[in-house]
Length: 453
Image (cartoon, rainbow, N blue to C red; front, side):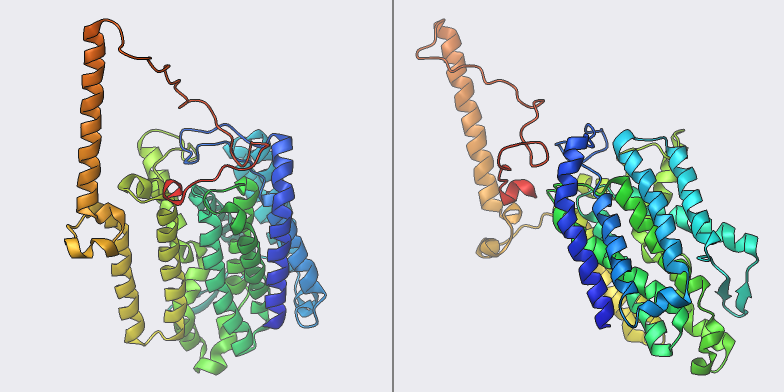
């Protein structure tokens, strides 16, 4: 565990320290596209954050290769090299897209090629557990098709959810933490060495996301771009493929009494890891809804719009930060709830806790729809939006000020000439870009907390 923590910390440190120079490079290189209709941010922000994340991946793999215990992962398996090869290819495609915005079909072809490169080097699904049957071996063609499909779907699911500051990095970090807990339990708890690569991939992925998040939280100073979102999506899929397609449930039959019993015991988490879209169910649901919505409207499934889940949360009335935290909550509930259920699948308390937290999540989700009338004695303990007296006072003052302005203007018009000096017309600056942390040479403007949310 100490070596995994060291690898995670080194990966996070390298990613964090490189993100600042990468941000300056992105500004100089012009990787700051114009604001699009579907974007939430209001100022051009540099991309190419995936460059720092990729070098963090390389640093993590390099450190792990020189550690006594983790070095066995590189000696006994070719999966780390396969991951690095596929990650380098998908990263290059993402960098080109962040700079030149290449066609969606070209990106899709690059994703399939990156998945094929990993398959050629041994990172593929060899078998899958089926309840009631046991382990089902796959042919070479079946394993290749399933692996490529899984990688492509996971990459696009993570890419689709990357719409708010810190959203994709935080959700993938939560999913990788759950994957690390399960894979470490399989490797260390049951002594199955085939789960060691997946444990290493999850630790490195957590470090990449944790190192990038301080720069990407709202208001973001840099975006990861497609070079980052596709990269972390590929690593997440690679870890799921490794722990599912390489670990034979029959190896655990000594712990469970038989192959079929082992399959049933591991099923609650084997299915989520076979389809990592279940452990990141929120991005997967967003992906499916986006494809259905765009196809129904006669558009391409890859056409961008403002109908994603995070956009809906903003429309409901949530602030930027609250929408991100709600998505974090649901991701953590699904991921860690699945892992907890796999450990104690017969415990009723686990199910009751998941149901209770789900109810709490629904209340938080619909909170802007409700404006309860807070008693006067409790107004000091609730947010300002629930304070009835202050809200009414503000509305009354605003209406009085509007009426006075209208009367003054009418009096000036009736007199023919203004009684005093007429103030100069205030220019409309709504369309003028103001200095921002990503574009200004001077000091970054300070934003008050209530404006930020």
